[in-house]
Image 1 (cartoon, rainbow, N blue to C red):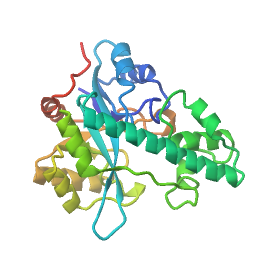
Image 2: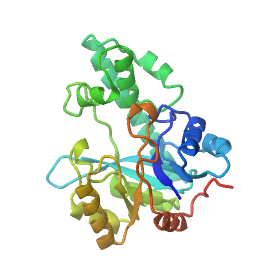
Image 3: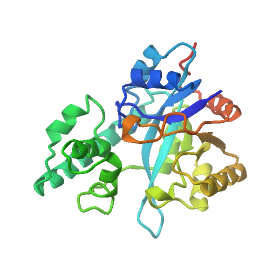
Image 4: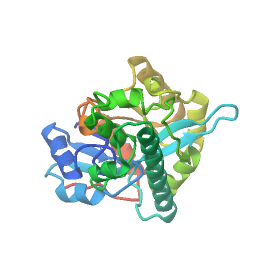
Length: 285
Protein backbone atom coordinates (compact mmCIF):
# COMPACT_ATOMS: atom_id res chain seq x y z
CA UNK A 1 0.00 0.00 0.00
CA UNK A 2 1.11 3.56 -0.78
CA UNK A 3 -0.14 5.95 1.89
CA UNK A 4 0.34 9.76 1.86
CA UNK A 5 -1.00 11.37 5.04
CA UNK A 6 -0.39 15.10 4.43
CA UNK A 7 -1.83 16.95 1.42
CA UNK A 8 -3.51 20.29 0.76
CA UNK A 9 -6.23 21.41 -1.63
CA UNK A 10 -7.38 24.81 -2.83
CA UNK A 11 -9.65 24.96 0.21
CA UNK A 12 -6.52 26.16 2.00
CA UNK A 13 -3.20 26.77 0.23
CA UNK A 14 -2.98 24.04 -2.41
CA UNK A 15 -3.65 24.69 -6.09
CA UNK A 16 -5.94 21.74 -6.82
CA UNK A 17 -9.57 21.44 -5.80
CA UNK A 18 -10.38 18.46 -3.57
CA UNK A 19 -11.77 16.63 -6.62
CA UNK A 20 -8.61 17.33 -8.63
CA UNK A 21 -6.48 16.23 -5.68
CA UNK A 22 -8.33 12.91 -5.52
CA UNK A 23 -7.64 12.32 -9.21
CA UNK A 24 -3.99 13.24 -8.76
CA UNK A 25 -3.68 10.76 -5.90
CA UNK A 26 -5.21 7.95 -7.92
CA UNK A 27 -3.08 8.75 -10.99
CA UNK A 28 0.03 8.62 -8.79
CA UNK A 29 -0.88 5.11 -7.64
CA UNK A 30 -1.76 6.00 -4.07
CA UNK A 31 -4.02 3.69 -2.07
CA UNK A 32 -4.62 6.12 0.81
CA UNK A 33 -4.54 9.91 0.98
CA UNK A 34 -5.23 12.27 3.86
CA UNK A 35 -6.72 15.69 3.15
CA UNK A 36 -5.16 18.03 5.72
CA UNK A 37 -6.03 21.60 4.77
CA UNK A 38 -5.02 24.35 7.17
CA UNK A 39 -7.49 24.96 10.00
CA UNK A 40 -10.54 23.81 8.01
CA UNK A 41 -12.62 20.76 7.15
CA UNK A 42 -14.44 22.46 4.28
CA UNK A 43 -12.92 20.12 1.68
CA UNK A 44 -14.03 16.89 3.34
CA UNK A 45 -17.41 16.58 1.61
CA UNK A 46 -15.99 17.18 -1.87
CA UNK A 47 -13.18 14.68 -1.24
CA UNK A 48 -15.69 12.09 -0.08
CA UNK A 49 -18.03 12.67 -3.00
CA UNK A 50 -15.35 12.66 -5.72
CA UNK A 51 -13.13 9.90 -4.32
CA UNK A 52 -12.17 7.45 -7.10
CA UNK A 53 -13.04 3.83 -6.52
CA UNK A 54 -10.35 2.04 -4.56
CA UNK A 55 -8.87 5.20 -2.99
CA UNK A 56 -9.23 5.55 0.78
CA UNK A 57 -9.41 9.12 2.09
CA UNK A 58 -8.48 10.06 5.66
CA UNK A 59 -10.35 13.20 6.76
CA UNK A 60 -7.89 15.47 8.52
CA UNK A 61 -6.59 18.99 9.07
CA UNK A 62 -3.36 20.84 9.82
CA UNK A 63 -3.79 23.00 12.90
CA UNK A 64 -1.70 26.17 13.32
CA UNK A 65 -0.06 26.04 16.75
CA UNK A 66 2.77 27.51 18.80
CA UNK A 67 5.14 26.24 21.44
CA UNK A 68 5.85 28.84 24.11
CA UNK A 69 9.31 28.36 25.72
CA UNK A 70 9.89 29.98 29.09
CA UNK A 71 12.87 32.05 27.96
CA UNK A 72 12.53 32.39 24.17
CA UNK A 73 10.08 33.71 21.58
CA UNK A 74 7.33 31.25 20.61
CA UNK A 75 8.03 28.63 17.94
CA UNK A 76 5.61 27.78 15.15
CA UNK A 77 4.29 24.21 15.34
CA UNK A 78 2.00 22.46 12.88
CA UNK A 79 -0.25 19.75 14.27
CA UNK A 80 -1.82 17.23 11.92
CA UNK A 81 -5.21 16.03 13.17
CA UNK A 82 -6.90 12.93 11.78
CA UNK A 83 -10.33 11.33 12.16
CA UNK A 84 -11.77 13.90 14.58
CA UNK A 85 -15.40 14.93 14.90
CA UNK A 86 -15.73 18.07 12.74
CA UNK A 87 -18.70 19.21 14.82
CA UNK A 88 -16.95 19.05 18.20
CA UNK A 89 -17.78 22.52 19.57
CA UNK A 90 -14.43 23.51 21.10
CA UNK A 91 -12.30 22.43 18.15
CA UNK A 92 -14.79 23.93 15.70
CA UNK A 93 -14.60 27.29 17.50
CA UNK A 94 -10.81 27.23 17.49
CA UNK A 95 -10.74 26.43 13.76
CA UNK A 96 -12.96 29.44 13.10
CA UNK A 97 -10.73 31.69 15.22
CA UNK A 98 -7.60 30.52 13.39
CA UNK A 99 -9.16 31.14 9.98
CA UNK A 100 -10.00 34.71 11.01
CA UNK A 101 -6.43 35.15 12.29
CA UNK A 102 -5.06 33.91 8.96
CA UNK A 103 -7.29 36.27 6.98
CA UNK A 104 -6.40 39.26 9.14
CA UNK A 105 -2.69 38.52 8.91
CA UNK A 106 -2.89 38.18 5.13
CA UNK A 107 -4.67 41.47 4.75
CA UNK A 108 -2.11 43.27 6.94
CA UNK A 109 0.75 41.88 4.85
CA UNK A 110 -0.89 42.94 1.58
CA UNK A 111 -1.64 46.43 2.88
CA UNK A 112 2.00 46.87 3.89
CA UNK A 113 3.26 45.64 0.52
CA UNK A 114 0.84 47.87 -1.38
CA UNK A 115 1.83 50.88 0.72
CA UNK A 116 5.40 50.45 -0.52
CA UNK A 117 4.32 50.23 -4.14
CA UNK A 118 4.09 46.51 -4.75
CA UNK A 119 1.31 45.83 -7.28
CA UNK A 120 -0.94 43.62 -5.11
CA UNK A 121 -4.44 44.21 -3.78
CA UNK A 122 -6.40 42.29 -1.15
CA UNK A 123 -9.54 42.19 -3.29
CA UNK A 124 -7.71 40.53 -6.20
CA UNK A 125 -6.09 37.98 -3.90
CA UNK A 126 -9.39 37.06 -2.25
CA UNK A 127 -11.04 36.68 -5.65
CA UNK A 128 -8.20 34.48 -6.93
CA UNK A 129 -8.46 32.23 -3.86
CA UNK A 130 -11.83 30.91 -5.14
CA UNK A 131 -13.21 30.61 -1.63
CA UNK A 132 -10.12 29.16 0.02
CA UNK A 133 -8.79 30.41 3.34
CA UNK A 134 -6.42 33.16 2.22
CA UNK A 135 -2.91 32.93 3.62
CA UNK A 136 0.67 33.75 2.69
CA UNK A 137 0.74 31.28 -0.24
CA UNK A 138 -2.07 33.24 -1.91
CA UNK A 139 -0.10 36.46 -1.41
CA UNK A 140 2.96 34.72 -2.84
CA UNK A 141 1.06 33.67 -5.96
CA UNK A 142 -0.14 37.25 -6.41
CA UNK A 143 3.46 38.45 -6.25
CA UNK A 144 4.40 35.87 -8.91
CA UNK A 145 1.49 36.97 -11.14
CA UNK A 146 2.61 40.59 -10.77
CA UNK A 147 6.15 39.70 -11.80
CA UNK A 148 7.64 40.79 -8.48
CA UNK A 149 9.19 37.38 -7.76
CA UNK A 150 9.83 34.36 -9.97
CA UNK A 151 8.26 31.72 -7.73
CA UNK A 152 6.26 31.06 -4.58
CA UNK A 153 9.44 29.81 -2.92
CA UNK A 154 11.20 33.06 -3.79
CA UNK A 155 8.36 35.06 -2.24
CA UNK A 156 8.63 33.08 1.00
CA UNK A 157 12.39 33.50 1.05
CA UNK A 158 12.19 37.28 0.72
CA UNK A 159 9.09 39.46 1.07
CA UNK A 160 7.07 36.93 3.09
CA UNK A 161 9.86 35.62 5.28
CA UNK A 162 9.40 36.07 9.05
CA UNK A 163 12.36 38.46 9.06
CA UNK A 164 10.83 40.60 6.31
CA UNK A 165 9.46 44.03 7.32
CA UNK A 166 6.19 43.01 5.65
CA UNK A 167 5.69 39.90 7.76
CA UNK A 168 2.81 39.90 10.23
CA UNK A 169 2.31 37.38 13.00
CA UNK A 170 -0.92 35.65 13.94
CA UNK A 171 -2.17 34.30 17.25
CA UNK A 172 -1.87 30.54 16.86
CA UNK A 173 -3.07 27.91 19.33
CA UNK A 174 -0.84 26.71 22.16
CA UNK A 175 0.14 23.27 20.88
CA UNK A 176 -0.77 21.50 24.12
CA UNK A 177 -4.21 23.07 23.91
CA UNK A 178 -4.41 21.96 20.28
CA UNK A 179 -3.54 18.40 21.22
CA UNK A 180 -6.21 18.42 23.94
CA UNK A 181 -8.84 19.77 21.53
CA UNK A 182 -8.06 17.11 18.91
CA UNK A 183 -8.10 14.28 21.45
CA UNK A 184 -11.38 15.52 22.97
CA UNK A 185 -12.89 15.41 19.45
CA UNK A 186 -11.84 11.77 19.05
CA UNK A 187 -8.95 12.64 16.75
CA UNK A 188 -5.34 11.58 16.36
CA UNK A 189 -2.79 14.42 16.77
CA UNK A 190 0.52 14.04 14.91
CA UNK A 191 3.42 16.52 15.02
CA UNK A 192 4.11 17.68 11.44
CA UNK A 193 7.65 18.09 9.98
CA UNK A 194 9.03 18.62 13.47
CA UNK A 195 12.73 18.77 12.56
CA UNK A 196 12.49 20.77 9.34
CA UNK A 197 15.33 23.10 10.29
CA UNK A 198 15.28 24.61 6.79
CA UNK A 199 11.94 26.21 7.78
CA UNK A 200 13.32 27.92 10.88
CA UNK A 201 13.51 27.19 14.61
CA UNK A 202 12.41 23.72 15.72
CA UNK A 203 11.46 22.14 19.03
CA UNK A 204 13.96 20.25 21.13
CA UNK A 205 13.39 16.71 22.35
CA UNK A 206 12.16 17.89 25.74
CA UNK A 207 9.38 19.89 24.11
CA UNK A 208 8.30 16.89 22.02
CA UNK A 209 8.29 14.78 25.18
CA UNK A 210 6.07 17.39 26.85
CA UNK A 211 3.72 17.20 23.86
CA UNK A 212 3.61 13.41 24.23
CA UNK A 213 2.71 13.84 27.89
CA UNK A 214 -0.10 16.18 26.77
CA UNK A 215 -1.55 13.48 24.50
CA UNK A 216 0.38 13.63 21.22
CA UNK A 217 0.04 10.28 19.44
CA UNK A 218 2.47 10.51 16.53
CA UNK A 219 5.22 12.33 14.68
CA UNK A 220 5.72 12.87 10.96
CA UNK A 221 9.14 11.35 10.30
CA UNK A 222 9.46 10.94 6.53
CA UNK A 223 8.87 14.40 5.06
CA UNK A 224 10.53 16.15 2.10
CA UNK A 225 11.95 18.85 4.38
CA UNK A 226 13.66 16.33 6.70
CA UNK A 227 17.22 15.26 6.01
CA UNK A 228 18.23 11.64 6.50
CA UNK A 229 19.78 12.54 9.86
CA UNK A 230 16.65 14.40 10.96
CA UNK A 231 14.47 11.43 9.99
CA UNK A 232 16.69 9.06 11.94
CA UNK A 233 16.61 11.29 15.00
CA UNK A 234 12.83 11.70 14.89
CA UNK A 235 12.32 7.96 14.41
CA UNK A 236 14.44 7.23 17.47
CA UNK A 237 12.61 9.85 19.51
CA UNK A 238 9.27 8.36 18.50
CA UNK A 239 10.45 4.95 19.65
CA UNK A 240 11.58 6.36 22.98
CA UNK A 241 8.24 8.12 23.52
CA UNK A 242 5.99 5.36 22.18
CA UNK A 243 4.64 7.49 19.32
CA UNK A 244 3.34 6.50 15.90
CA UNK A 245 5.43 7.49 12.88
CA UNK A 246 4.06 8.73 9.57
CA UNK A 247 5.39 9.77 6.18
CA UNK A 248 3.91 12.12 3.62
CA UNK A 249 4.56 14.54 0.80
CA UNK A 250 2.94 17.72 2.20
CA UNK A 251 1.66 18.14 -1.35
CA UNK A 252 0.46 21.63 -2.37
CA UNK A 253 0.02 21.23 -6.13
CA UNK A 254 2.07 23.73 -8.09
CA UNK A 255 2.76 25.81 -4.98
CA UNK A 256 5.60 23.39 -4.23
CA UNK A 257 7.80 21.21 -6.40
CA UNK A 258 7.37 18.08 -4.25
CA UNK A 259 5.23 15.45 -6.00
CA UNK A 260 2.38 13.69 -4.26
CA UNK A 261 3.49 10.43 -2.67
CA UNK A 262 7.09 11.61 -2.35
CA UNK A 263 7.12 10.16 1.17
CA UNK A 264 4.73 7.54 2.48
CA UNK A 265 3.51 5.90 5.70
CA UNK A 266 4.13 2.31 6.72
CA UNK A 267 0.84 0.35 6.50
CA UNK A 268 1.16 -0.98 10.06
CA UNK A 269 1.57 2.55 11.41
CA UNK A 270 -1.44 3.63 9.37
CA UNK A 271 -3.58 0.86 10.83
CA UNK A 272 -2.54 1.90 14.34
CA UNK A 273 -3.45 5.51 13.56
CA UNK A 274 -6.88 4.50 12.26
CA UNK A 275 -7.51 2.38 15.35
CA UNK A 276 -6.80 5.42 17.56
CA UNK A 277 -9.28 7.72 15.79
CA UNK A 278 -12.89 7.64 16.99
CA UNK A 279 -14.34 10.97 15.87
CA UNK A 280 -14.78 10.35 12.13
CA UNK A 281 -14.67 7.46 9.67
CA UNK A 282 -12.47 6.87 6.66
CA UNK A 283 -13.96 7.58 3.23
CA UNK A 284 -13.55 4.25 1.43
CA UNK A 285 -15.28 1.51 -0.53
